[in-house]
Image (tube, rainbow, N blue to C red; front, side, top):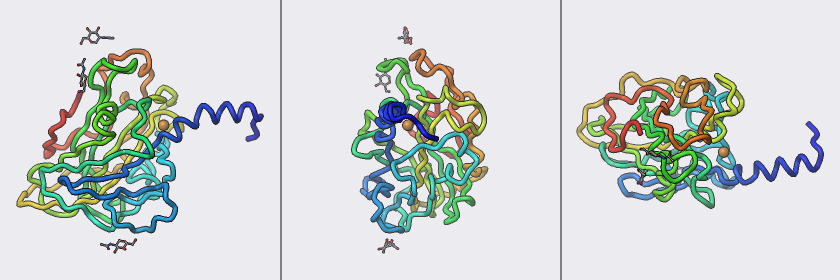
Amino acid sequence: MLLSISTSVALLSTLAPLALAHNHIDEIWANGVHYPGFSPNNPDLPYPSDTPGWYTTNLGGNPLYPVDANQNQIICAKGGSPANISAPLPAGTILRGKWWQGSGWPVSHHGPVIDYIAAYNADPTQLKFVKIAQRGWINNSTYDEGYWASDELIADDSSWNIKIPTGLKAGKYVVRTEIIALHLAHLGTGAYSTNGAEFYPQCINVQVSGTGTKTITGGVDARTFYRGDEPGLFFSNLHDTPNHADYVIPGPAVWSGATTRRSFTA
Ligand SMILES: *[C@@H]1O[C@H](CO)[C@@H](O)[C@H](O)[C@H]1NC(C)=O
Ligand SMILES: *[C@@H]1O[C@H](CO)[C@@H](O)[C@H](O)[C@H]1NC(C)=O
Ligand SMILES: *[C@@H]1O[C@H](CO)[C@@H](O)[C@H](O)[C@H]1NC(C)=O
Ligand SMILES: [Cu+2]
């Protein structure tokens, strides 16, 4: 569509700060051992690379929308392909990811942070995930929209700690961690709409060790997590009040085998 120059400039100046602020998991720590993340912004980076972060073609760390919720890209981001190494760590320890792209997670992008895990499969459409942690609205401090999991992430060096369930059976797994930004959720128009909540998934390979016996049961395809019309995504009053105690985190229930040190709800 042709736009007048003044309209284009106005659109650019509105969109550019948000677009530039988007980021990806740039650094990973597995039980304290550091790895680089996969950088979608470096076109020279070979695939596969020596990072446990999955490869993605999502240049610029752009968001997915409800329209993507039943598409392959919701699983492990656009063009998601498996990492060629897995970060070793014992069950019950912490996998940590830092969201970065010149700067940290944008404060405007308030919303929940949700973690999933699946037994490894090189084909993302075969991954059956269980939810191992979720955190949404926290309290009514600091911002007009209140204080959210994304704000807690920003306060922790734009990073998020994911506890690998205690007693999880040794083996190779894919962790899927995700931030959902709600600042434009009021623009959603229902299930699978092209506007609305923004999804930022990232997959990371881990090699879990230990003598645990817990196997993943009841996992589901990430393409069934969300629709876009559930209350935690189709959300009209984020900017109206800092009080969102009734916020319902979207997606499946937390797995009975999860042992997170974060509270499951706010
Ligand atoms: C991962 O891929 C890179 C090439 O991009 C290669 O140099 C490296 O040896 C591979 N690592 C493993 C463990 O296969
Ligand atoms: C809100 O939550 C944050 C993060 O947990 C905490 O640091 C802060 O003290 C809380 N503020 C209030 C007013 O409860
Ligand atoms: C925040 O919540 C407390 C109760 O927990 C309430 O007293 C206070 O008025 C609220 N602040 C705002 C700005 O809504
Ligand atoms: Cu955004």
